[in-house]
Figure 1 (cartoon, rainbow, N blue to C red):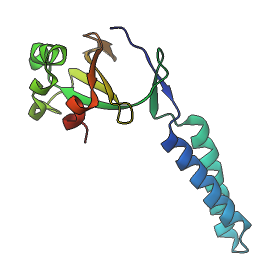
Figure 2 (figure 1 turned 135 degrees about the horizontal axis):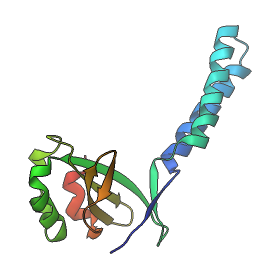
Figure 3 (figure 1 turned 60 degrees about the horizontal axis):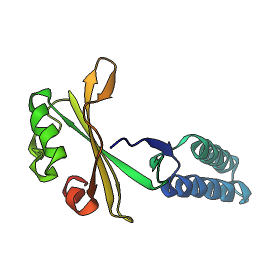
Figure 4 (figure 1 turned 90 degrees about the vertical axis):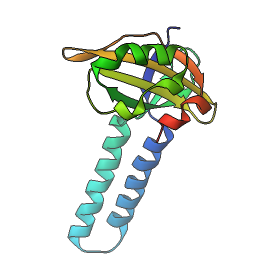
Length: 148
């Protein structure tokens, strides 16, 4: 299955930006000292900047579904085990090996609302991660144990 995931702004991004803008605007509008007004100005500036830059959600280019992403890193030595596990039974991934190396990365794109999850293994090739498996679709219930 070929899937493409594009980074987009999620609800959390909008909430953080809006909260900074409102709080900063309130500090600027209140009759307080100059230092509080300057702090409010920088909060408004940070809120606008984050609203433009921050993109923490992912969108399935095919369906338009908004997803979140979890990354897990594994040593290169268990490549075949992970490749077989994500292809057949996701529960067989040796999670205790996580963060013991960075030769492999497993990306889990998921949505609690729709109950969909997509998993792909990537292998580190100097300076970037390249796909080492296709994207596999699962239900969210099967991958919920990996998402903390």
